[in-house]
Length: 179
Image 1 (cartoon, one colour):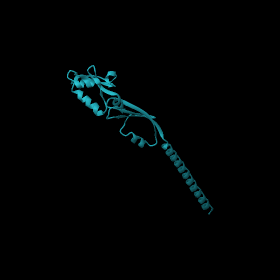
Image 2 (spheres, rainbow, N blue to C red):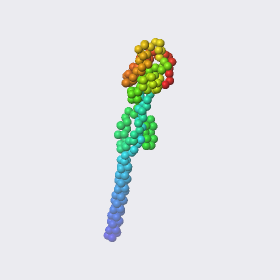
Image 3 (tube, rainbow, N blue to C red):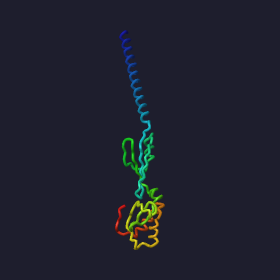
Image 4 (tube, rainbow, N blue to C red):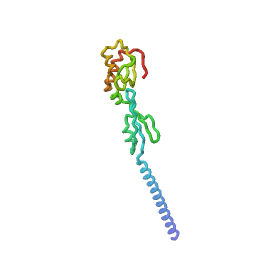
């Protein structure tokens, strides 16, 4: 009976040891998981550069610092933007805008310089050229259109911009001009 009693004690001690070991191991695993969860929930700061590319060639840039607590939310914020560059702590997005730039709407005037359809910053008399398009056959140009170009045609909207380009395209010489 002594041997059975001894064997029973050893068996109980082994079971208690195994249960204790399992409990400690599970506790360590839970603590590790909790630490990883806490680490994953810590917000990430990222420098974000937004580039808006307008149909008139202007690119506006804005840089902000984003605090990101959820990557899905971050990506949904910039849905429709194209990633141009991404490195640690910084991401650069670009979006093609189907419009002319605010700068062009504020300061842009169509005019003519040396026979070339040109956009000026302010009225053409200031001669600060923003962009040049193509040579116009001024001999073929109706006099009121020529006067409008000399005085400057204010660019107000995308539609206005496109309409002026189309109007004068029919008076275009075959010679192209680089802006």
